[in-house]
Length: 235
Length: 394
Image (cartoon, rainbow over all chains, first blue to last red; front, side, top):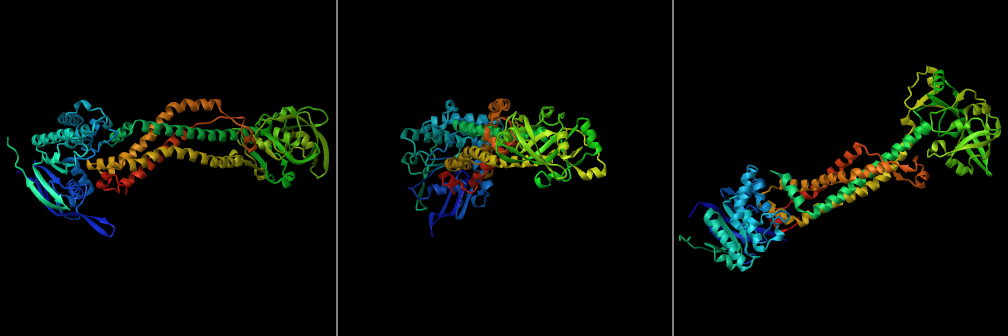
């Protein structure tokens, strides 16, 4: 088991709904170690995406604390949260969220451009390597609309891992993909997890993803219903 | 952070959308600068015309002279001081005597101002040389508009009635020896020009004048204190006050047109930026998720909008420069309507484009574009990244 990179304690999140409040997360306590390949599993409305957003410093908890990579999310300023996302966390979205006017290369380069200390040559090398990882080196000049769904998601993966983040958060990454593309995407992520020791946390209810997870955390009504781990294969 | 690089990527990546916005904005650039040039040309042409035709380099007015008070006109005359006489003798000034008179023509009675002017003068653009000689009738020159309203033409005659210095009425026949093709109202409507010596004789005002028109760029003579009390110098700025205020009124009217063009120009950018908020909100949410700060996000989109204007200025420069140069040479044909409005313009209006018009308009449009790009972008700052990712507008 690696070092704990995420510690969530009594985490709750409510959204105002008229006079009442909708409790998306209710007293969640969890921790994740470096190198995990874990998934938040549950039906729609169970709080998966909310939890992922808080871990990713995109949202703040209503109560409780979330410590991610040594930083308390609820204490971060917007600028510090942006820096955390830029340097240490990669995001993969259900709808790919590629920047439509950018080429594949430019989409992958975008997070690196936010890191001014990177020299252009180093940046270029990192983008090329990310393209190699996802097998899209020959599509660097294409625009998202010229790619298939599977290719788009591979670009999104490359964009998430190009900066060598310690943590990648994937929100329903296969929801818009067919079985073949889903399997391919999962294989790429498993390979990156193994080779780079990047921590992957998924939010999913897709069996095609669930079967690849080594840790399955089931959420129901904003609570942790079960937390089951499969030991890493040493083969 | 290379914000400019990202803004340029957004701009050029948008392809056709950018092309159309830049083109529309560049057309507006050219039209706005073209219109500004027309007004500048109109203003210059008007001032040049009134200066050449009547105001010269400025005028010395007898202290009793008030161009807006016809009742005191007959009292506004005096002997020229020595300095002004010397100036007139040297051909650097021309005296003019103005009297109230009545013209009887075509069964009409028309109140006019009778202007006596030296026939050998070359200071103003009235062909006074034509007033020399003639038969028994008093030779007179009138403007086209005056000829039209009085029903007179070259060679025509009319009866003129005036009062001499003592108030005695007298009358004689005048013959129109020339009609002036002029747009300067001050020498046309209600004005009859006759030889100065003849008018002085008719009114018993020998050696006297109402005003003295000086040549453009002539040095002002030093008048002795008593002469300075009776003769006051009115410079071009004072004399052209009416024309300038008329131009200001026209400029304000033109301002509406200017605003319409500017509005159209801004619409493209504003549309792009506003639509960016609604259509590109997920894009912005993605950028926030990837670690961009809100301040930098606002900068990128503001820069993107501003770059539209910069590119439009470059495009406008490329095709607008030859177009506007050609327009400045060929000019803009004016109909009769402008003359009827009382504007002193020729039949063709030549636009004038000064660096201040071109650079000022460009700077103004670019600054305005930056502002209208910034304002909608500010709304982004109110979004949380999760709202932006969901495409939810605040």
